[in-house]
Amino acid sequence: MAVHPNPKKVLVIGGGDGGVAQVLTLYPELEQIDIVEPDEMLVEVCREYFPDFAAGLDDPRVTIYYQNGLRFLRNCEEDYDIIINDATDPFGHTEGLFTKEFYGNSYRALKEDGIMIYQHGSPFFDEDESACRSMHRKVNQAFPISRVYQAHIPTSPAGYWLFGFASKKYHPVKDFDKEGWKKRQLFTEYYTANLHVGAFMLPKYVEDILEEEEGKK
Image 1 (cartoon, rainbow, N blue to C red):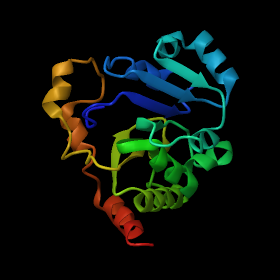
Image 2: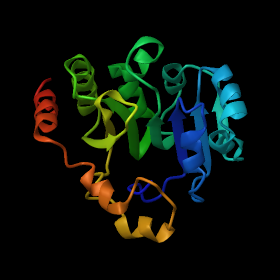
Image 3: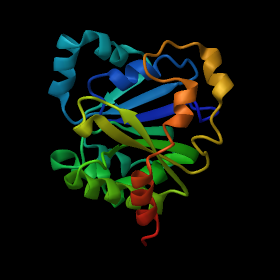
């Protein structure tokens, strides 16, 4: 939202707890927020036990589709300005949301200047590194711009987690509208305009991993 100059339609894959929707509703320029969540019970439970988060689902711009995210994307073409993959991990029932087909379908579902954000996993432990490598290789092959940023999340493995930024046009740092975002004066507990830039400054061992995968065809 701090990089795309004029987003109107956003698709959230997963996000049944309403947390991502809650944040997106803070941006008045958004006209449509579609959430694709396969687990209807998750939404019901979150509405009951996490009402502060789930309140975002009640915004009139939000529509929830109870279906598989990959299947939903197959029917989309240049529909969205931003896609946020809020699926948990590239294992089990969400494995299909981290495949070459998923990233290719996401590319097709985005408008000509669209942006995709996704979970990138953690490179810290050997058992997680292979999935991290695989994701970057697939996205790098699907999008002309592919960058990775980091965050400190205590509940994630090693407390160190990566996220991916992929775009057809915009660079996450070069096209970052720092002053425009600061003028919004949104309350945040973690994110700042300076952190936005710093998050893309990765440790060397992470850079090495990503560069190795970028060199593969």
